[in-house]
Image 1 (cartoon, rainbow, N blue to C red):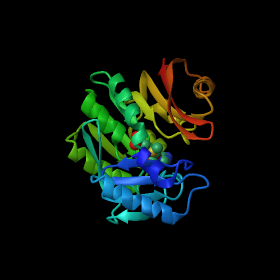
Image 2 (image 1 turned 90 degrees about the vertical axis):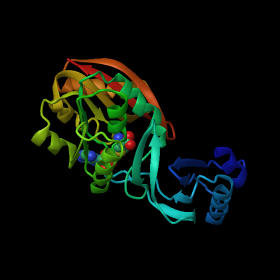
Image 3 (image 1 turned 120 degrees about the horizontal axis):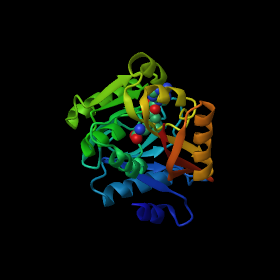
Amino acid sequence: MRELLKELLGPGAWSRVEIVGDIAIIKRPFGSPLKEEYRRAAEEILKRAPHVKSVWLAATPVAGVHKVRQYEHLAGEKRSETIYREHGCSFKLDITKVFVSPRLNYEHLRVAKLVREGEAVVNMFAGVGVFSIVIAKKAKPSVVHSIDINEEAYRYMLENVRLNRVEGIVIPHLGDAAKVIEEKLVGVADRVLMPLPDLALDYLPHALLALRGRGYLHLYLHAHSEEEAARAAMERLGELGRRARLLGHREVRSVGPRLLQVAVDVEVG
Ligand SMILES: C[S@@+](CC[C@H](N)C(=O)[O-])C[C@H]1O[C@@H](n2cnc3c(N)ncnc32)[C@H](O)[C@@H]1O
């Protein structure tokens, strides 16, 4: 698909396309060609990739509390809801209302493989439930509490729990993660996921509050290098007076010029 787009928009264009279910998203690069060229490219994608039914232009980067982009419809069905499939799970979602990134695909499974039988997990920023449901399907947790502040994400998460038959394992919660933990999830978790770089460091005290004592944290941070992200996480844990052991770090994806999203895995004693 990338090759096709390169061919349609010219070799100099830094263009990318992302497929979410049967929707193709063309991400707008800096100094992008005129919109008409995108429309032609979108029509061509529909012709050459029959599984794609609708093409949208990502008009802005992800933004705001809900981490949603603004989109312009380019071609095909004017529909933004789809079923996104990953690791044998299905996720109903609307690309204009909730966060989704197929580029987190590997990371979802990587974390699921670390979860041991019977573990209780808290996912502080769960979106439509991708991490949580992949964990419930690929590992044997006792429970995955899944929090999101976006009502639309919460509504899709409820639906996705049913769609993937993980009722009773993945428990959706609507609200601010800090508040939900304070009110309902103190001392319940063996593992806490923090897949939101904007809040991962600020919300660390609440991640620690959710832990039963000893446990694991997965922080997602933006940094110039993996080492910088790991240092920031360990320093913050030190400031909070917690003994912590760095288990590893991994570049998840590039998110801007020389800026990375990094996963930092920590064991807290
Ligand atoms: C990057 S997305 C999560 C991605 C998701 N884990 C996945 O793998 O697809 C971050 C999510 O955090 C939610 N969010 C933002 N602030 C929040 C808060 N204070 N408490 C709970 N959720 C929050 C957003 O609505 C968004 O769905």
